[in-house]
Figure (cartoon, rainbow, N blue to C red):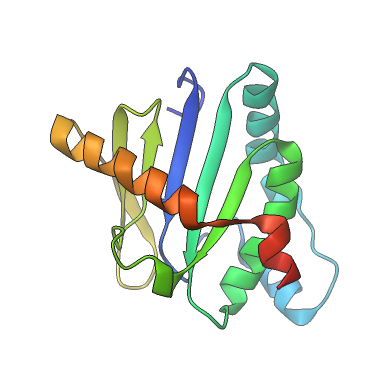
Length: 159
């Protein structure tokens, strides 16, 4: 899906933490205040750069609790790299997101909706493609509402 979309790939992120074996070492380094080895991120950044060079756009809104968890702080740190690669990541405090879904999803080209599934321990279980046009339209609205209220990574990081 990430290499096949034509114009836009949007993600709404709603969790304060995600478990990913790829990030474990870097997260530990970040929390310890050490230099962070970002090699684990190279493939994702490459894909974003390629999509951007082809005129395709990655964007996301991260709904975050305040104060930020260590993982959310790590996400702000990592978003400097993804934004530099061409993705536009923005932030929305959780208290301003009450009318948005409480689950993560990707929306590709405003027409392909993919809900992400996680267990209670924050592990990614898989994804569900949702074909119902009413749901797709609703999630376009959620995207637009989240984007309208969210602040840029630069503004959020400065706060």
